[in-house]
Image 1 (cartoon, rainbow, N blue to C red):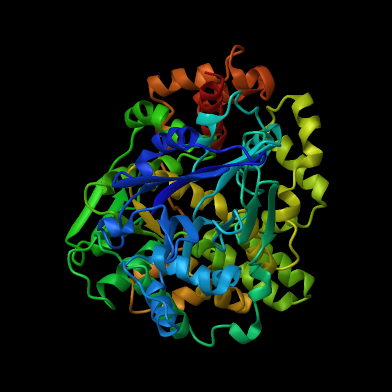
Image 2 (image 1 turned 120 degrees about the vertical axis):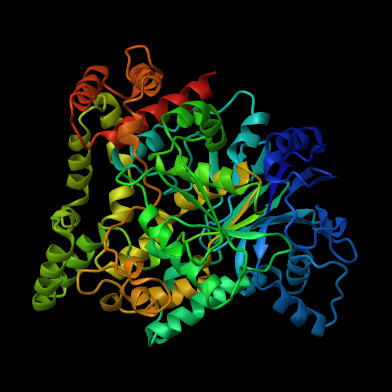
Length: 610
């Protein structure tokens, strides 16, 4: 796990090292153990290293292939590198290190771009070919590892984070108003390859790019829908558990300590239970955010299920005071607005873990492959209605109402049935504080409702989430973990597990009013029944309602929606926001997410303007 960056000039001018070194200094937290620079002709690349495999100097990057033709900078992990090294050794390759980087270089030397299909892992890398004077850049299937770039007629700049690119752009880029609109209206970020900055984009997940002195061309090498087939479907819950266990075992390959971010939910609990039972790991460290019994977001009673199993359990308690102190650093490191305070809770968990381990595992991705979010009930109901499976629909609705005591899933079904334009209008009216000119300028260009809320089936909706929603969660995890020089690994996003789960019938995903039915069956006897059968969905929730009553944070909130704030100057109607906040202060509920977004957007905008 590392940070990569580079510059490719399109006018055949020498790239030099100065810009690369400036970018490296901004992201040194990603790689405190080592660094290196490669510069040749119009290409320069930089690297900062967090040592995970082969901690010796042999893992130094940029790394050259045997013969010196190829030079690589690589961020991520190839978890099946041992198997690939054995295969490549069998056809004559010799290896001088114990790194997956050297294996990746050999794989590219042997198979070219086709090597990507053989990789199981997470990656963003660039390989420079001295012979052709071109570069090959690639990103993993689901976007676990980041790759940002800026390009104009003169050059391409790339990096693992946005801040290093900003450090060498003069003048800086303007604001992408469409990203702000989707953030405020839909709580969405990272659903396209654009960012909050005009001109700074992401290399899309599952894509590679060929770069030379005249420009670059992006091509898709992996599309999830192309790899789904009923023949791949799990035949039994035990098959799911076996493959999940295999995925976890691959992600234990490390020469440094490994721990788990334990939320108390089903997903992270599954990983902890497998490590403690199937793998018999002693001295496992877990890291959790807790707030006190009865506080929103507190998972203590579920985390406590492991108190007799795990000896080294560590806890942090974020509060209004810590948020006020951390907000400048949190805003800086994320470099874009964040739509919920749970991302801050994860930031604090990673801070807690940094002095105990170097690698963390967590349950990211399980909600996307197993329909874990509550609104998926609405898509399931719509799916059954369109198939005219009315008896099954009635049974599922009844079970849903009995188990959840909520009408949310039914309202979600009706929302999903609306035309695309009405879906956007409904969300805007729900907010009630956007400036009219801002709304009119951006509403027609938004793709959120089309990409995320218009699928014809639950299975198609889950695929849409991988294409358009998954990446913001992965970005936050990467930035939070790397801020504290940690590598985060996500066993549920092993592509074999994803493809087989999403090839399985939706009847086994949401069943009898419960999400994640397949995994719940698989985990019988593995996790406690209290966790296995829990019906709520919390994730990294926080008691933000309590936080927002703190005088320090109230001052920040009032400043964000004051007439002189940057966001009220352009996006938000000050008077409407003030009315919403007044209702909140007088006991109103359901406004906390909007308040958090105002804080996040104003803080980011101030940093951009400053």
